[in-house]
Structures are given as structure tokens and as C-alpha cells.
Amino acid sequence: MIASLRLAPFRLYAVLDWFVPEKMKEEAESLRRARMFLISHLFGPFLGHTISLYILLIGPAPDAAWWIFFGIITLFWAFPLALKITGWFVPLALISVQNLIFTILWGCYHYGGMSSPLIPWVITVPLLAFFYLGSGQGVRIFVLAIILLNLAGFYLIYSLGHGFPTHIPLAQLSGLGIVSTVCASVYVSMMALYYANIAMSQSDLEREVKRRLETAAQLREATNEAERANQAKSEFLAKLGHELRTPLNAVIGYSEIMLEDAVIAERQQQSVDLKKIHNAGNHLLKLITDLLDLSKLEAGKMELFVETVDVRALVAEVASEYLDAAAAAGNALTVDVDPAIATIEGDATKLRRALVELVSNAVRFTANGTVTITARSDGEWLRITVRDTGVGIEQQRLATLFENFEESEDATTSKYGETGLGLPLSQRLCRLMRGDIAVESTLGEGSCFTIRVPVMLRAGAAAEVDEAAARDERHRARGSLVLAIDDDPAVLELLQRILAKEGYAPVVAASAFEGLELAKKLMPALIILDVFMPELDGWQLLKLLRKDAALRDSRIVMLTVDDNVKKGPALGADAHLVKPIDRHALLRLIRDLGVEPSPFGTRLLDRPAIDLLEEAQI
Image (cartoon, rainbow, N blue to C red; front, top):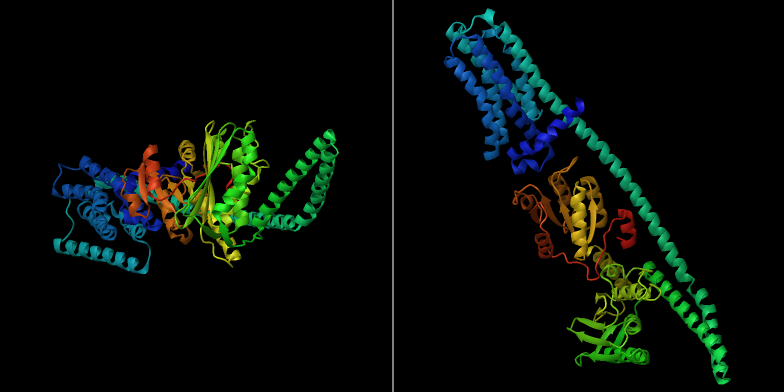
């Protein structure tokens, strides 16, 4: 019974809020008072008319006094519409208080005088006034002044009229006393239960907020601990680089010497074995070098060495290294460098390393086809494209292609990037140079990788570039990040599929509190927000998000069954869409808001938020 009473007001919110002005919905306290005002005026007249109809039942034919009594009770039903139309809450609340006092005193005057069974209703006047207007000192004085003035007027009319009129003998009003007392008790109990429900909800909300804050503190501590562990690991591997490379250099060097001797001595079987040892040593050295360089990048120890780079010579040198391998596979390797490109200011070693990785992959996975290296510049950015007609890459793999140790189960393409570190390292090297790598591919038709780096990388700013690159990487990590907040699992799953298919990185939250926590942690580029949610509705959450300085740049789209499309933008949202979801309209709107999908594709992000935070290092 108690649980149903607690939930009952929430079932009415959809109806009550239709009457509430938009401005009052922005403040929780104002919204609470407006709802109490509406409950009183929507349901109170039913109790009032119970009394008026009982008077009609026990009395003579209705006269002017009864019709006025009936009319002023009915007038209470006009107040919700007046609030909807005008938005004048305080004036209407004061007029309502005056109307209630007049109704009570009018009934007392005509039906029993000072012995009227309607007297108990007087106690409801200050109670309702404080519910509507608060309990401030000014409100108390004003309400008490209204009550005293009305009582004085009541006494004055009584004095001038030399008594009370008798429409119904006092002896017949005993039954009316019972009806009046019951109705007043029900009315006060109804308002008290609603108020108690609000108090309990606020208490529950406070406990939930406290629990969420404790969870957030634990999450921050766990994140900090993970970051410290990752930093320690990166620093350890960076320092261990010399110790790992030294024995490998010996293995490679001695195997190479022995291989030359075996070739000269025409020991064929020994040559084959030594060549395998030599290749395995080089492969292991590359793996260790890639791993250490990734660790140096994560630890912020990687430095840039800015110099003048001859783009044409660099591309030609890399292409020449793979001419024989391309010819052996029946491939045509061509180079197309714009003659207008002369030199750029950048790190030649890191740019060459990234280009070697792309050309090596293209040649290795293309047979009897073409590999084309193209270089173009628009004056601000240099773009080097490596396009092949090889096996291509599956679309679902594009989302994880630049992740460490990524491998596919496909037998043909599982070695793309060999160790799983080549492409991630190449991308991070380009990002260190304030650039990036993008990929487009169709399975069975080929792939196209594009390196983009600035043509002018300022010298002497390695540390500054490291910091800027880290910021850029974090920005890109969340540049296509979309947070969907809705208490409907079906809606969340649908949004995940739509967004992931288009290249966005969707993260979902099944409640407003979870969504607020994730928004503060992930700083998404876009937030898709439902309105009707338990505990905290979408309008209140929208206000909290807009108050957070760190989230002011995040785009917010309201996606709800509420078809008042002007409401969302009026309260600070960037747009308002009505359910059911129109996929094309949603995607068009997202792009219009400037939120672009990742050029590398994405995947469904269904892991806990802490994993995403650690992975993206946001």
C-alpha cells in the first residue's frame, strides 16, 4: 500500500508536467511546488463537491448561496489551465489561497455560522499556502494577513447582517459535519502523503548520490593506480632496451658472418639454417624495438628530431627497398610524388618508419597486382598514400587495426602488421608529429593507407609536441565518442548498432546517474539523452551537464517521446528528436553538429567504463 502511494505521484508526472511552465521545470524546488499546486487543484474540487452535493441532498431547492458555493469550488479547476497559459505561479497561488478562504467562510456563513461543520477546513489554508509558496518569513506574514483580513470581513458582515442566514436547520447539519471532516482529512492526508513521498525520494536521492560519489572516488583511485602501474611498466621497458638489444645484436651479427662463410664454402644446408636464424633474430629485434618504442611513447620519453626532409628522396628510397619483393610477387610498384613538393620540416626517421610499415604490408599482401605510393601537399599538410590491390581487410577489423597486438582469425590477413605492433606504432609516431594515419579497405579489392603530417613541425619543441600529441590523441579518442543515456535497453542496443556501423564509438548508460558519471569521465563529443527516466529525468540531467564547465563543448541531443521539439533547445540542448528513432535523421543531425566518425572505424564498446578510460588514457 505504502509503495503504491509512493509511486502514484510519479505516474501522474506526465499529466502534471503538461501544465507546468518550462521555466519552472528548470529548478527542482519550483517543479515540486508546481506539482503540489496542480495535485491540490485537480483533485481537491472532487472533495469540495462532495460537500456541495451533500448540502443539495439534505437542503431545499438550490438557491443563490448554493450556486455561488458550487461555482467557487468549480473555479479551482481553472487554475491549472491558467498556470499553463500564463506561467504566473505566485499570483495564481495567492489568488487560490484567497479563493479557498472565501469558499470556507462563505460555506460557514450560510450553513451553520460559527457552528458550521465546514470550520475544520480553515486549517488547510496555511498548510496549502506553505506547500505552494514555501515557509519563508515574508510568506508566513502575508498568508496570515490574508487570513486575518478575511476573518475580519466575515465578522463585519455578520455584525451588519445581525446574524447568520438559515438555509438548512442546524440540527440537519450533523451529517454534513461528518462528510466535511472526512473530506478535509482525506484532502490533508493526500497532500501530506505526497509531501512525505517527496521527502523520502529526496532522502533516497541523497543516499544514492552519496553512494555514487563513493563509487566515483574508488573509480578514480583505481584509474590512478592503473596509470601508475602502466607508467612504471613503460619506464621499466624503456630502461631495459639496451639490455634486450645487446644479445640480439650478437645473434644477428654472428649469424650473418657465419652465413657469408657458409655461402662462400657452398654449404647449402648450413646456409639455409643460418638464414632462418638470421631472419628470426631480425624479426625478434623488430618486435622488441616496436615494443620499446611504444613504451617510450606511453611514458612520454620519445623525442622528436626536427630536420629538413626531402620527401621525394625519402619516398624513392623506401620504394627501392621493396622493388625486388614486389617483382617476386608479380606486383608493379609505382611512385607518384607531386613535383611541387620539395621539402618539409619534420622527423625523417619516424616518417620513414611509418611509410616502411605501410609499403611492407602492401607488398606482402598483394599478388599479381599494383602498389602505388602517392605524395601530395596542400601547403599545410603532407599526405602520403599507399594503395594496393591486394587481399584487403574486413570491415570489422578496421576498428581494431591500430590496437596493440591486434590479430584476425582469418588465415590470409592474420599477419597484417606482423607482430601486431607495426601499425599501432606507426600511427602513434604520426600522432607524435601532430599527424595521423587513416585507412580505407574493401575485402578482396585492396586497401589504402594515408599518412598525414604537417609540412612545418617547429624545431626545439619536442616536449611541447609530446604534450600536444597526447592531447590530440585523447581528443581523437573521444572525437567520435557518443554517450547514449536511456533506461530502455532496446533503445540503447539500437543506438549502439546504428552508431557503431557508421564509425562512431558508442558508450551506453542505463540511468541518469550512470550517464552523468560517464560523461564526466569520458568527455564525449556527443550525448544522446532520454527524458523520462527514474530517479532523475532528462531535463534535470541536461541542466547538470550544461553547468559542468568541462562538458560545455559536448553536443547534447534529446531523444524522447516528448514531441515538444522546441523544449530541448530552449533548455540548452543542441537538438531535439522524437522517438521512434529515425536512423537517417539521427545520423544527419550528428554530422550537422560537427561530430565526425572515426576514419578508422569503431566497434561496440560494451566493456565497463573504467576499461575504456584506461585504454584511451583519457
